[in-house]
Image 1 (spheres, rainbow, N blue to C red):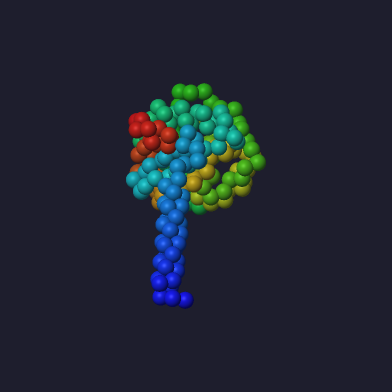
Image 2 (cartoon, rainbow, N blue to C red; image 1 turned 30 degrees about the horizontal axis):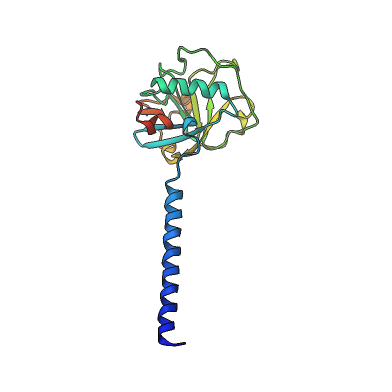
Length: 199
């Protein structure tokens, strides 16, 4: 091979390598900047420790999801505390009174139990003894909680920010998880609204 051909061949190889590297980088950037799959059913829940991103499941519990979204759009959850937090089990919020007895002014929701299991990161609706008493309160599981399967309504799943969930201040097991000076929801919003700049 002549020197000229070697230079041309080397140049082509270098150009091909640079092109491949550029394309790979572009693909990588596109993946990392990929939009949320369903911003209308994605919740941003911000605490003092960071953001928890929740994917709602209208396919499992359409009535519950509709109610959570309606309350979120109102700003209902902003400032509410995690009033009941049991280490190794779950963190509960959504009560405007902070006592575990409160709810919104919207009607209670009929149960929408499903085969979806309760596991780490599952978001479920809290209720009283009456299966059809869920309203505004919900909880996020720290760990698997299969004993809740088919007894409580699954409304979503944490898709990022479980490290933030783990930092929520825990309560006393002896006092059923009641928390002194509890952490709170700083802001809760629907991802689509956050993207459009709605408050």
